Length: 256
Ligand code: ARG
Image 1 (cartoon, rainbow, N blue to C red):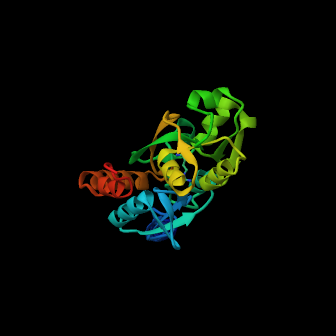
Image 2 (cartoon, protein in one colour):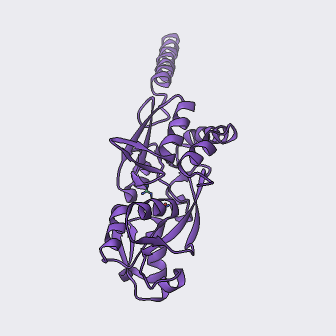
Image 3 (cartoon, rainbow, N blue to C red):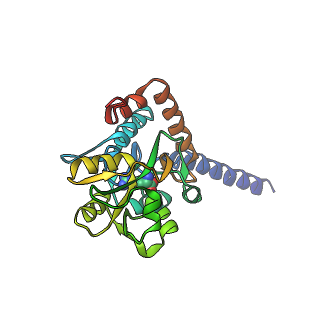
C-alpha cells in the first residue's frame, strides 16, 4: 500500500516536471520566425510599396518598419502575388499582409485586420483621347477593363460589368501597359498608384469621378490576437506621435 502510494507520487512528480519543462521550451513565438516580423506584399504599387533598386520602399514598408521596431522585431518583406497574400497569412507563412490592402467583409472572414492607417479610392485610368468620360459611361459601355488580379478593383468590376469584360493582370503596371497598347479601354486601380502610373506613362489620364472609397489595413492570422493587439497598440502610438502622418506626407505631399 505504502509502496504504491510512493510510486503514484513519483509519477505525478515526473509528470509535473515534464509539464513545467514543456511549458518553458514550447512557449510559442508570436511570429512565424522568432525575432522577425514577416510581411507579405506585392511591390508594384507606388507609393505604398515599390522597388528602389533592390530595396522595397514606400508608405507600407516604412510603417511596417516602425511597427516592427516598436515590437522589437526585425522586419522582413516578401514580394509575392497580391492574390496569394491572404492565403499565406492564413497558413502562417507570413505574419502580416500589408499591401495597400482594402478592408472588406469577405476578407474579414479569412483574416483579422489591424486598425486602418490610410484611405484609398478606386480610380479609373483611360487614355487621354478616350471617349469614356466618367465611371457611369465605363459601366454602361462594352468596354474592357484591366485590373490587378484579386484586388477590390477586380472584384467590384466583376460584379458591376461582368466577368467577360474584366481582364486580369498579375501586376498593376501590366494592366496600365495593356491600356497604353490598346488591349483594354480602362484600368481600375487605387488612386495613388494610378497617379504614379499616369505620371510614368505618356497619354493617360484619371477620370474625375471616383469609383469606390476604401480603407487600408494590415491583415493578420485570425488566431494571432496577441500580434494583432500589439500591432494596433504600435499603430496608435505611431499615429499619436506623428510618425505615421509624417510617413504618409513624405510620399503623398498634401500641398503638391
Ligand atoms: N486596395 C486594393 C485591394 O486591397 C489593391 C491593393 C493592391 N496592392 C498591391 N500592393 N499590389 O484589393
